[in-house]
Image (cartoon, rainbow, N blue to C red; front, side):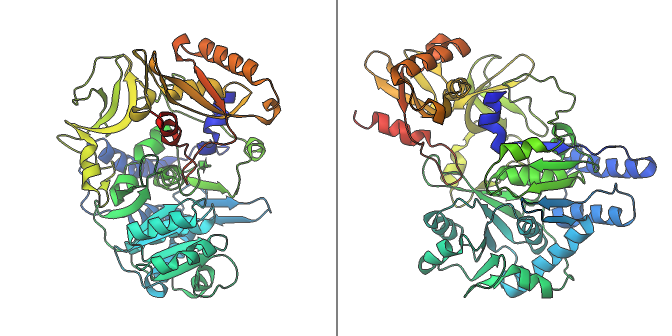
Length: 512
């Protein structure tokens, strides 16, 4: 459990169950029918609609049921911070405010349907407002983590040709420093108090904006979101998602993985720049009519998490610790070899999603402006994820590691993830990255770069290395232990906080 908390808690989510999750009669039947409609599309029982917009087809429908008293009395959005401030919106209020925000984007910012907006914001209510407003206006939203540097922001503005950026006072100077090279940018919108020269203030504009706005009619496959990859290998790439891929695609996970109902409150602690925020802070809960709960923690605080009445839930499925679980509709997930053929049960290969004869509509559309990269993800009838894994006899998938991170030591294939998971269980290990390192006898061996916990910094390094090696031998197979260990002050990371194994691996192999 300690290892789980250390490695996964920053991306975790919880469902805060209401005292009573029951609602009765026709209301319950009606709500079940709404969720089941999108679930049926996911399972291929119904055709994907030609037109779909999450704001008008889902959120406005919940607002209508809420107004008619046919939805449990639960807010759509609930935000708090450490200062005791609180924001609560019903679905009706979310609708009204997002229509005002859509008018701000269209009128004050001069944006048109299809234009792109970069939003670099922490966990503030305006981030959720902008998500819905962009859907209503047909504007493509590009979220970014607030850890982005000026260089990161400049690259994203140039690559996306975004016409507007939305950020706060903290990051506004970084944006201003790259304005000379941002020829596509037409407007800058700031979230916060007061004014800043050359910037429009969202709060001031919302105060005078009209709530009269007609949602644009978007096709299911029209672009809705662009996420930049973390840039682990090469420059970050733009991944395009359509209105249906997330807007309908997360009906299954909301209902069966998270087991959400309109009586529940959903808390996902992911940073707004991560795609996990879209999955579990927008689409999964709201398609089920649940409340999205947000705690504005600028930095992760375990003690704050521990103070709330919380539990993680999986519905109906046998849990196999360490497994990714089973595939959910509409995905057909298989383990394939280098030629795209499905491998036998228990054999390692690449985790892949079948895209022929039909590509799942909720899979991302393409790597924008990068057809070569898009084509490289297809192997035979499958989209290859780049992750290595195995599937057991019950259909559970077990992650081994990234394909380009696998270590081949004297004929043994070793996934760095398993070694890292073992090491992080030891109290001496704060952070760790495992890569291959050249070896004259074995070709390559496992090397661990370790950031020590403060209490262990003064320990004898040789004794500590031996202790860590023995620990890995006990937790995993003996041949997987790190033959080389280096204690470091920090690990190279992307702007989104993802450890860059490739940087460490290149350093190890640079002198050959």
